[in-house]
Length: 552
Image (tube, rainbow, N blue to C red; front, side, top):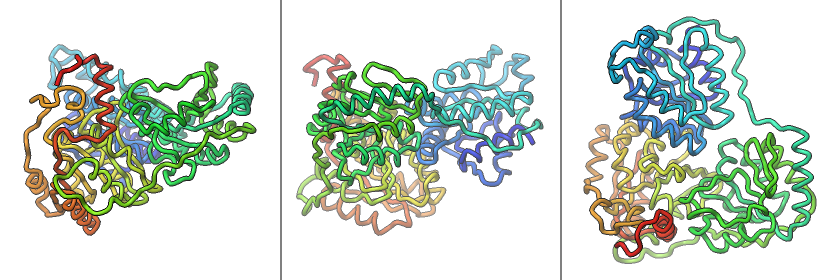
């Protein structure tokens, strides 16, 4: 078969049903092959950055995603999205259509280059944020496509495939069998030493607690995490990046651990345990307010392909094998469990302007089991990550890379990855203005999310750090209802504006009654009104980023 068809075949085998991107002349041969293929669909985006964000959102629910861009101008536009996927361990296949091989060998001064015959600059940039980089040709395509996809799956990192426009239709001897996807493996001798070590630690510990992180979700081990927790009977907390990976209505769930930013009781449970089992954790200052105050000598850490106990390292131990060892490691004493707060009725709407505290109390009662909740960085993530979620919900954000505007295109990807679930996007007006045009793609495809946009006149997360009243933290006011109308010539959306709590209640009821349409809710609040976790984050970042004290 042709190189392009083999690549599409392999993408389908790993579960890719949609490919995101923007057309460009160096990739059009491959786009023709996509359109001719059964079982895989092209999704055109408004720009390449949005396409990369969409592929990221798709991969978080689907397991892997793919994006196609054109050489240099297109791929560099998408690179921020690829870098975010790299930072947050999201497997995305970045396919770049390049000039023909004879054009590059001849160093011809063609468009999308600097005119000096150097075709390597964009690839050098991509190499910083991808696990593998390949220039495909007729001789290496069969081997290198399989190798790159295997690495993408194994490492949960993006990979970079350059597909010259004259190579896509070249015929190769493609392998007959399906692609065998690699998984982390275990060295039996190392596992035995790890088992002896953690067994002694657990039996000697006066208290044990468990903290789950995002790697559990990326590698699909949520079910085994639940078995481990129930075998231990210990309190369980999750980082906000792993929200939903453990049932939040479970009797052992004590809440989200946010370090200096989070609940003090949860912090005491996690940081005070004699033995803390950190499963798949990945920390960031936006998640914990700085380096967590956890003594590493008391931590048993488990990652996808390695583990540690205190200061001892155990390489080549897979997460499932390590969790199985921990579950059967012998007697232990669980730390005291104070179950996380459950959802309570916020009561009657309060009069006056809508405020953050009441807004989030109302949103907590809006979520349903199985929802996909997506929260952009800043106010939306700080408020959304603190809410209790019903069982079966997924929570998507990007706090480590922290690129505002990520979630609107990621919503598109998530909707296509899990079309049978309700999707709720929480986003600020500043974030929305960065990628607003992708609403048109959501509407074009007839998708039906609930978009809740907080309109507070700018970048509240930045105001909490520095420049509370500075002009640089303000944005242009938009008529968001008219924006949706402009993107919606077919009349598929409902827009609602809420300036009071009573209007918010009515808006959420409207969303519940219009599940066959996209519902866009504009919630208007004061520019300095912020969730308490965001205020604490701003104070922490103001200190650690060395902003001068006392600046208003």
